[in-house]
Length: 297
Picture 1: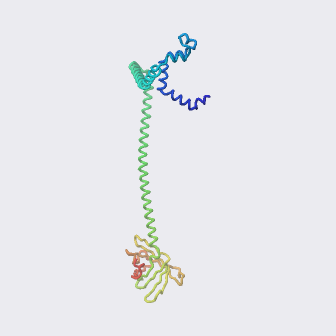
Picture 2: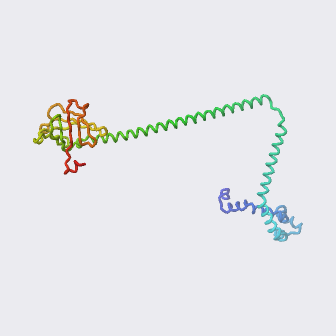
Picture 3: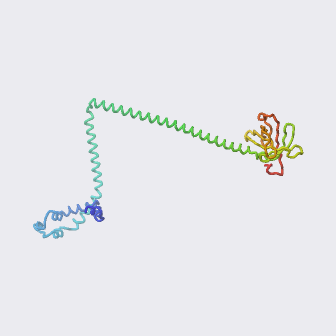
């Protein structure tokens, strides 16, 4: 039954209506404005009503009910109550606050000239000093943390700058290595070259790793195999190592190694003395074939 009254929509609606300030104040006002009916129905039985000249409750209600007491007065009282109750509550709160402040001020005025026991005074003084010390320590700790934070931020900025520098260095070195690798391909030597070796002149025709040597009118008299070639595109320094071929096989255990220097447009190779272990004087000048667009480029 309790759950029924709690969950039933009808009773929920009734509770909401009764809780409404206007409806509640109207009901209370109606009971007071019609006090004859209220007292007769609540405190007198039908037998007792006969003493007052009423045969039953119905006659009591019919003879005492009227529009002014049952509708007009309760409605007016309910409206006034609903409108002025917030103002009344506000006035009561203000009055209570004033009384509380007046009471506090009065107590302070009465006790301001009083004395504090010596023990209580020293306890309060020690407590105050302790709190001041703790506050000072907290301020110093905050300052130290702020300083350390600034130092760590500066250190992090320096580390990030170093990382950026290292990344740029690695990027440049990677690019340089790629350029070095590209310039160190033997295909860069492909083509015909006019060679001056000490006081002799002859021609080299380089195809991939093979060198075909022609002297005067004797075509492809000697043949060599390039075993190593390195070129620094920045300085133009180059190292060339090749070995003689017999057929398609390398002949002899010793290789021929020369240190060379490119000119600015990479069309002439000349012996670089400090790289020339046998003090050979070699000059290679590329022969440009105007009919070969690959050699022009």
